Length: 271
Length: 247
Image (cartoon, rainbow over all chains, first blue to last red; front, top):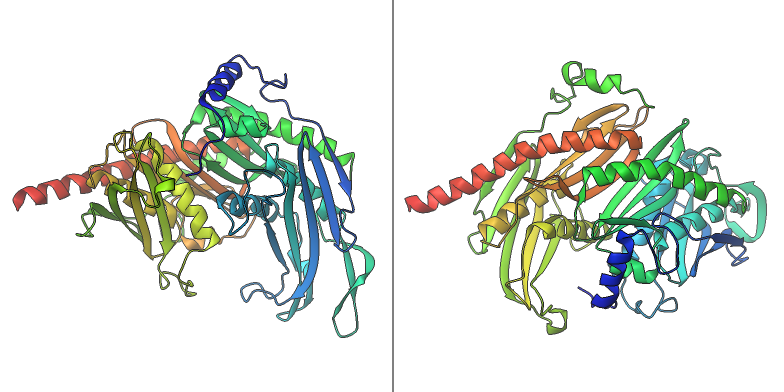
């Protein structure tokens, strides 16, 4: 267990404020911070994006590689999501082997994208059983001010939609210096995002700052998308030792589609 | 709105590949006291998925800097034995097993009260002998029994089950075959854990495709299944006490 950096005093204050629907930065409990997305973090990547979500700042890069398909899916390409919580981004992060948060972040982004069906993996086939494209998404926070997973999911979406295949020569080797005009085989309709609810005492909030996030007892992260005109949950994971009641889950289910639309609408301005 | 009529009909009509009803659990086996060396231990099986759990502690936590002077710490470790799956699992922790260890910890924590054991740790070791989906949930059920068997102060037992959906049909306690279902809306796997006698959920983990409106129905099915699991756990714990008395 890591030492809590937030004092009990702050935690009590936040608990009392959340109960009145107030926050230090004057947002309402379910208000999201503004965000903006920029591109071309690295011109060596096949696609990249950077999101500034309040003071949270995350870069996401997409690299494409040619590799072998997995034996159980010889006609499908692969997706790998990884990343690290760099000590650059926060005094909380340390060098060395990844801690749990560093393992969890890419896994949650991976599941939201993979399960939504956004990527047409069959179109990543080069030669059946031998060669396929592998999409490698790497996530690095530059500054952590809370709600990293949701911010990273938006940046991953932006980066994927601005990724171009590099050229393949006649022997099937990649020439990274030459990009084609071909984009990834992504569904236009399906655009998964991550939405995380945080609970402190009996209050539920969205989009916490780092301080608020530290104070909260529990987080539950959902991957949500639209599929055949319906909202679909694609992933979910609860973190932390407090429990959630079915009534609380029900409330979240009602809030989520609205927040998904709000985020997606804003994201479209940057695509 | 999704079509809910199918869900109401399903209980009577739809049979699953192993002949179960949609809301029927696989045969459960539960036994307490399977590791004599441990302070508490238990085995729990859902059909072909078999988990054993052993509890050691409370005992002094080393390294010292990890100690919490305000209360004891619960520490869980989950893993598959290498031969529990068809493709041999490389021994040692994976990202998957680390994640499951952590969610297992969170699932059990609300049920245990370690305030009387500052600077101590309670270690829960969970291993899967044979895997046919639902391993984390079987592991949590075994661990909850093992904690009770070890005499750790608890508010409640923790019951856990994997729910899910094949295309549009909600089902309880999926097998591997059902987890791999790929037609229509495909397979959704929704693992929950619940404090036995309350409406409090301590584990929620899912992947797949499910309409938000269906989540409450999933939780309702989960509650019913957890009631049955709780009975199986209590029965096994009582049996262990009775067999102790006979000696």
